[in-house]
Image 1: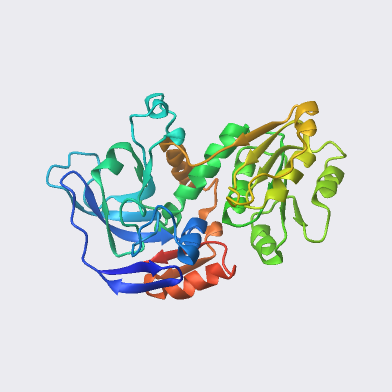
Image 2: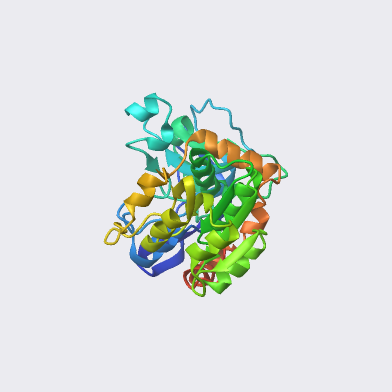
Length: 346
């Protein structure tokens, strides 16, 4: 079969590799679509501590069940279309035992512990079927849209923790695919006003398709002052930092309304992860700073439902579709910031 193999940082190619064997209690899927994620771009650019190269990456996957294992007795059958998110929970740590799977201390991921989805076929291990994030999807859902349920799941988890609700003013700092997803989801959650900001004109143009109430180029305006102006000096109920820039977390605290919620969604570089936040603002304004990461199975189920109902317009999030044979072209465009979300079709 054809697969994208990452040999070393910035050394990746389409290669002929063996079709994977099916676990006795697992599945083989024919990959229908695989999305390119920001973490994939980091792996292409500089490797990943959990990925031993050479390796097949790709963890935003949809596919059709091609084969079931000899002793498989689960709910899926040949011909079923699945949305395959990568998380596989341990089921043994205190958080899994409390069904707080998003805090699992020992989770593994498809495309790290097992080969991923930038290939014509992929093996789904038994572990992922028992304690993973895999769901059947409606036949009328575009496979490319079904593939990107994974990043949407993380956004759903974040906004759930932040209590985004009817009447809120929500600021999203960063308008890449995650920021645009937060704009869509905030609207679905009933936000009264959505303000999106970035320093990139091209990303702001992409975000315009999601119709936030205000778009701010933070390279040309003081973002905190603009948010205060738009909210009559009160600030925003919710601020989401959908980017890896420490200064935006400082600004988020400064633009939040009293008792506001700040969702720290984007991780920071390891060597620059201690922004100089004014903790007196946190203290005297009774702010809530909320960190979130990954998601639980129920968030993935919610993502598929919202996509199927059109409450999140997945087709708008996907700016480019490429045949898998054009992986290098699509990946280089993404690395250069020329796409919002690229999905590859084997």
